[in-house]
Length: 433
Picture: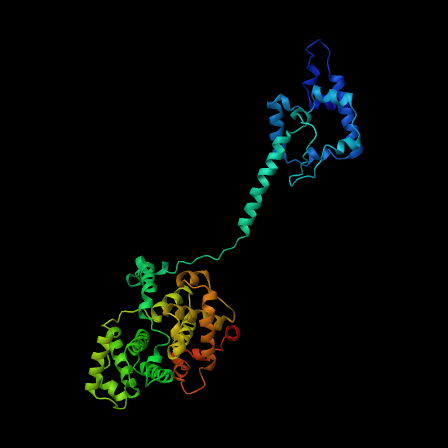
């Protein structure tokens, strides 16, 4: 069976066969068939237009057909279109002036005529509908893709596991550490205070603290006690000149005061005299204790590096080895006078960061650690490079108390980790700059 142009024309536009000329009774079906024949010839020659319908999705085709049936203006063949085709045969060059665009992502072609305004009757699908869909849909799709490509590191809720622990004070823990960061400056000392001392120097201070770390370990005291002891020594020496033969007494009394503040079982004065090889009498110890508390105005409640390092280790989700390595690095920093230029929170954050770099072998500072510490990785590099250098030199020289302490099985041999060499390179660059 051969399907003629008349059949195709009537199947596409069944209403044209019954359409009457308002000035008479002449039907225009013949003109319609002639126009469709010309279209079919052009389609056979050029091979462009069949893809307009074939590439359209099934659901989209039904939507367009429903719009055509509902709105008689959108008929594919109309009187005006038939008259235009019958009166003028467009050449291939003239058709190219219509501006046939490439197919979009839905397989549709969009026709744009810049010279003459085009009626919606001249096309099978309204141009305004197709063009508007492409222009409005493409930016939305691109925006969705861009949002999918963004892979931000999640910020962990480190306190959710302690929601039922009253000692963790989850309800106001953030306010508490915000207060610590605000007042930590009051517990810091000038990094040049030793210039005011006439009989002691930086080296003597280092010897004293290295010895106190060993005493602290022998007495099996809390970490808090050690950090507070060093803080009391520096704050006292900043305000009070001391002769070198009294420097060890200052360290012993600072340890005694820290124990009274932090410990449950406090070493007695006699024990402190014994570990000093009876260099001082009981009376001298009590007199120095009175002088120290008055000089410091009884202010013992200060945020030390210990307060911050526990919080930052929790943010880093550190295991026991990482925790011990971080404490090893921060205790090395307690001995060094040059590390006094860093505030306690920065020392704690740098110790955790350096420990992570040492264990994992790469720079690692998560968004969670940055959020809770308020320090970016760039801000930690200087202090961290110095810590890596201290780690590298810990087993050499005369002051090896911290190294020997953390080389024991009690501290899981944390000192035997290889230092982070790439952080030492940063130290060299900082020295050049």
